[in-house]
Image (cartoon, rainbow, N blue to C red; front, side, top):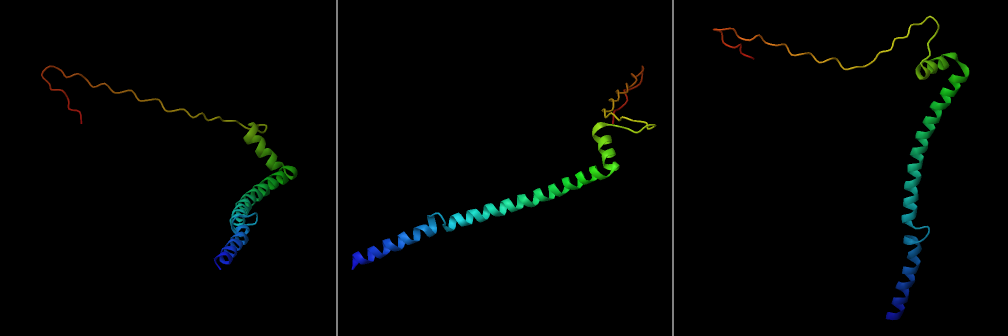
Amino acid sequence: MKALTLIFVILIALLQYPLWLGKGSWLRVWDLNRQVALQQEKNVTLKARNGTLEAEVRDLKSGQAAIEERARSELGMIKQDEVFYQVIDQPLPQALPVPTPAPQAGQSAPEIP
């Protein structure tokens, strides 16, 4: 009787192995579902980026305004009779310390707050 019980336990274990650890196991299915969800998130981001690029290409093909804006921002081009101003960011010069007058004879030194 013990031998028959042992055979059934081994048979059940062999049948359970593919379910938990085999090629189509629950762990592998869970991992693949997680990977699919991550890829779907990436796809949504990339579709939005593609839509933006497609709109930009459409604008560049159809209108002069987009071409002009791109030429101004990337190439620094200006129209005829326009004045170009270049602003250079530089730190302001440091103020020099104001010297205090030396006390004269019979006077005390001024107090510094």
